[in-house]
Amino acid sequence: MDVIADPLSLLRRRTSEKWRTYGDDVLPLFVAEMDYPLAEPIKRVLHEAIDRSDSGYVAERNGFADAFAGFALGRWQWSVDPAHVTTTTDVSVAIVESLRQVIVPGDTVVINPPIYPPFFDLIPEAGGMVHEVPLLLSETGWSLELDGLEQAFAAGARAYLLCNPHNPLGHPHSVEDLSAVALLAAQYDVTVISDEVHAPLTHTDGTFTPFLSVSPEAAEFGICVTAASKAWNLAGLKCAAIITASARMRAALDGLPEEVLWRTSQLGLIAGIAAFSESEPWLDGAIAAIQSNRVLLAGLLDAELPGAGYDQPKASYLAWLDFRQLGWGEDPSVTALQRAKVALNPGPTFGAEGAGFVRLNFACSPEVLAEAISRLAAVE
Image (cartoon, rainbow, N blue to C red):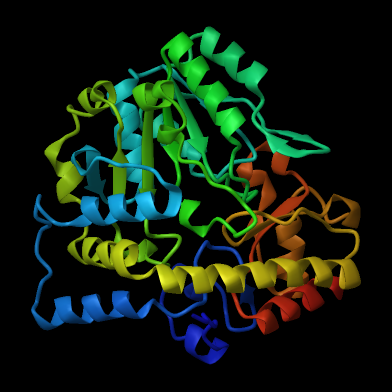
């Protein structure tokens, strides 16, 4: 099915962060929120819930785990045991609460910058200390720096916070890299927490592999955190999943406070069930629109802003743009906002490796994307 972005006149009536941070003179291409309308099955179940005043606390028996398991099996041939699925508020909470079960205050947790900025804050919130092992970029593309990971694990790291597909790069990690990580985790007794929230948005020319499905070692030492929030634009409804694939990791999460489950939003859970069980046609349409914009963006940059570096992502709707040749400084988003009235994510917030970069959200209409690049290109 075709998925088409809402017009700006309607989008500017939204009250979310994306549309309330700046005035109407700014094109907001920063927050990871799509400009597409909700999938019809999700709209339907939310309206039905409101009509029956179904806004209480979530029930322990709720159907979410079965819906996700069915989606994972059909989409990725990943067999998930519904008994190993726990819901909570959002992926950030899932990360913090999982970390609290597998580390003690002061333990080291590894991340791979450039990385989703909250990772730098979630680890200290859970009591850990951040250790950075930057991603590698070669002629063949992005990869994990396995030697650096092994050094960090051998030095005493207790957990590794993986992002797959990787934000801001839209890079699904290879089976080879994930298998190697699993072996290292088993060798050094490191828990791998894999944030896979962007996975449903993998493009038709990309391959996503769930970490827990890679090997027995991955199942034994891994935890998956995910949600329908990014793929179906449900971030404000607050429902995420914590998933395990072994008795060992299930036992590690036995200490989760009961409140972790109770913090799940009832409306978020209802919407998530509809997303995973009924809304794949909409998802496929959204991915088609995103891929079209991915290619459009490459052409616009080549024609109007050739100094900007851009590798087309294979997942999600985020572009990691290299503005270093443009001379816009360490944080080009400042110039973009002040002089072009285009709001982008500041590269330096993704780590030191992001200096001179910006992140651009292209889950919008082709017209808005073209206008944004035209504005950026007009900056002298």
